[in-house]
Image (cartoon, rainbow, N blue to C red; front, side, top):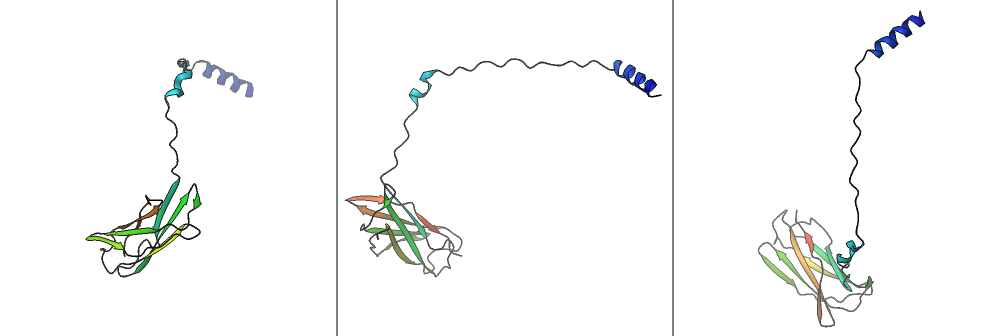
Length: 148
């Protein structure tokens, strides 16, 4: 019986449609010229002085007092003894922070900012901080916050 079923199976499969196999077309060869990298510009140099600033709270209360921190580095090492200044940019005007902190041994300074309701709720305000280094002004990335 199994021989009969096997014979029927082979005869049915032999009567099926023929399947064409499409061979993929050969892809073109890519050639890279040695002069390819001659026109690539050099990698920009990292500045020797870098600073960044941030706030102690990203979403403080509208009448809170927050701290604005900044850090100055030279070739990734902290720079001590440099004076800093900061300006807060509120929706209806700017406020110069009248403090004049000097960077500590870690390169850090701290400013204290009384918000006094000067910024509308849920609207971002920024604070620009800069350092005076050998007669040059080094600007930090701004700190930001948005009162609740």
